[in-house]
Image 1 (spheres, rainbow, N blue to C red):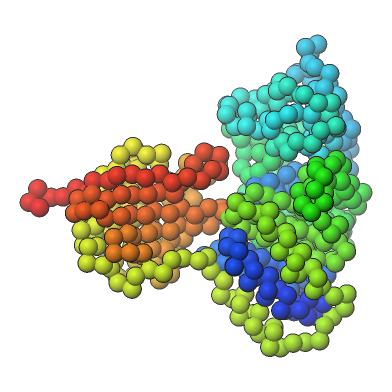
Image 2: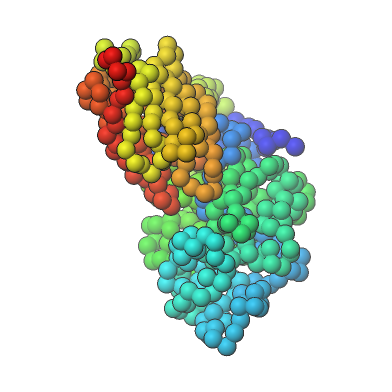
Length: 488
């Protein structure tokens, strides 16, 4: 079964004007929301799809907290199979941690409280877990003070999602991904789905999943169909309804899509919709009344601006019946969807005169968080080669096209989840003294920007935009020294 096996249709055939989708794409670009892909389903058919180059359909993308919705789905399946109940005590899965010293709020915590982010904690427990990677994270979770009676206080708590993953392993004897593979992933055509684990080999549960855009859309469609897929009931209908119904209130702002209630690791949204939601703009949005699913991958810190665009541009234009064919509008939409690309600067048409001082010269760098000791920039006819050597002597060679994206890999990645990252790179001079190399980490939402400014014959300033810490961006500025031969 192919990953891209959903049926395709024209928007008008499914009651959506091509002009509405065109307006949505233009709005996304005008607001600079860093989209990497967009797929719209109506009546289970793909009516629009696009990827912003260099992102592409067959590459899995980091899902962040969309992973939580898959973790909850495993709990729903495990309950259906008799492994557990959502009213079971959390301590019942980890009896070795129970003692007379355990506080009453911990004793009262049930699986449903983990699912609904109502554990009673006052802080996200994942922060403590991440800071102690070699420790037993479940034990840490149960020892962090629970300030409120479970079920009474909403707090978005990624540690709770990890404990759900640990419960699946504890009760079934297999990991989360393996448990879901035969029951959900393969039956709907999700093949080779990676899911990162913590140092003890337990899937993060809260994050770590990577999916292709169509797989993200299929997940939403499966829930829209109340667990039915190609005539088979993969998920209990009762579970899909409970998971996507508000189980706890999470705010009072009626105009916010983050204050409409929270289900079992699903967010409720305005317009009687719900969504799987991941940081930096990963969405599987389900609009049951319109029979629509919208799947989005992105790299933006302003993901809260995305749902209003759906409500403003797409929702009002959805019709109950098919529309008359509009060939001109459809041709314009097809052309638009075929040429989306992440915006890059306008590079100079040729290397400036001062570029010769940089070409093939080794630049010695001071200490930096990427542990790069030296770098060399080689200016070629249609590409630019960036070669780095780290403190262990390992060499990274990264090619960037001058007019197109070039594929490559890098180990210059400061997170334990991914030791090697696939990149697409493009480069050029943005002024007479500044060279930019833009690397899109295409399995992730992130872009790394190298900016190399020639200050003089022997000094350069290297600015590196780093994804440093737990998904926090910052730029590191390094004063490099150009090494020259003794005769120079």
